[in-house]
Image 1 (cartoon, rainbow, N blue to C red):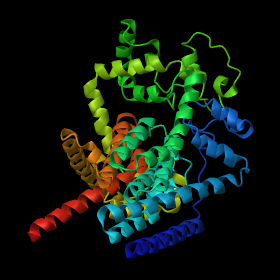
Image 2: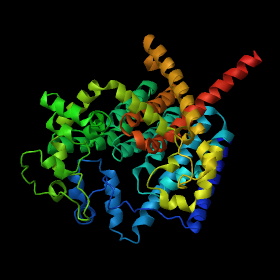
Image 3: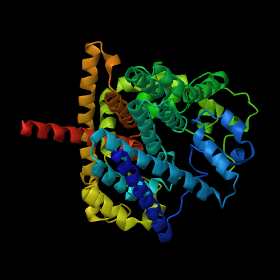
Image 4: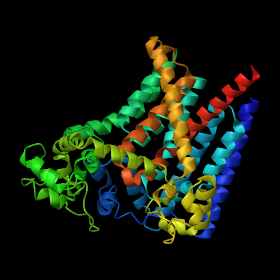
Length: 488
């Protein structure tokens, strides 16, 4: 009871700190930045979202629907209210995620002071301040994942169907918000919870039923309309980006003549509609503007054009052929990706407006806490700052990454021991929480490193808190074992 009271008191202090910091940066001039509202390819045509929201979402195939649903609903409040409504949503989700990190670290490390310090840092972190004030789905993803982990952890530890339902709901929301969080993760996490939930498996299935049905409904809709269960028709284009697109044009042309690559391989995977349409037979109009229009009403390319549902198989084949043709080059892609993965997320493109407001704090945070050598020599937006690649890496981010790798190896070894002993059903709730963390963190590391490459510090923000939890849990256990050995 005393521990629960202490946790509640710490959570209230953290919430007060979070609000105080938000008011401070608001006074300094930071505002929710939605300057990508018309230009970001992930956002559907604003005119269609305003006038035909539900129909536009029904025919949305390029992305999962929740991000555009949030935007479409907020647009109805008018342009002046839009940034305040969306900004409030981002702030609430961010605070919820930080409190989830605090609760998870308290439970999984047994160190309430460590949990409080980490959560307090997240309240003031430059990267958190910037991403929670920008119209990227990345400002929501890490916190939804942390709330999902906390719900599943608390549900198993307390044998609570309500907490489990919360965890699965947050996971479903993330899946329907960001295509990188694939439905297979929902199924895998459900399996983990079922294995560790002896005596409460019926409650586990009931808790997962509605969130799972929501994901399944969107997949079924896509199958019926577009012939694919994928939540994003861009998946093949992402794979093309780091495989076949990297081959020299002459090589691709030769492979097209040999029949190894499709005719589309001559262009970049992420090419706008007119480029692909010039290479396709005429496509009959569907009668749906979001599928037929070459451009949005604001003039940008319409990346939800129906053609992207028709080239997926060919572009997936191209990607696999491209990977087989140059596996060494793909290894280089992975190395580049991991380099950017360990750069400070606060330096991601598109954050410049609000970064200018907190520039001194952003630089101090990256220099002192992030241990980024380049930050000691100037801010990221200072043209005089060194561009030496190795100096751009955050040594703290790198240390967390390496500790997380150790965490992953340790958890995998324990799971393998259970598998060999045919005792997976004896998985403890604590091991289930570790396995869930490893599943999410490992998945994002692999997927983002394979596809994001030069934007991979954004993916680091997406999964950063999950990695931090795993790294600190691993470090705490190493220290505990060292003390036990010293005492012995």
